[in-house]
Image (cartoon, rainbow, N blue to C red; front, side, top):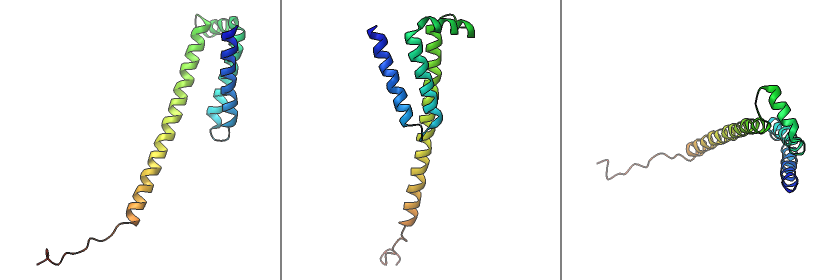
Length: 114
């Protein structure tokens, strides 16, 4: 019972976080909220996860939860990778723009030209 309460609180925390991030990343927030609500349901009614697992062709409910969690984690990692990559491209563009704007012509040295 203690584990059920603790896991439920953690997953409800994920739902609250997804709700606050919905405007910034709607797809990821919605997917996280749905998976978390399903997780809370499966925590309190574990026998239904076994029924769903058998329905989709997986032997145990725990395996279904693990596979679902793996897929969601991979989607989150992909989302983070794409965001990081776009930020790095933005930083590169800013650095180029600053470098071009601050570029100066080299001064000629009268001693070396003789």
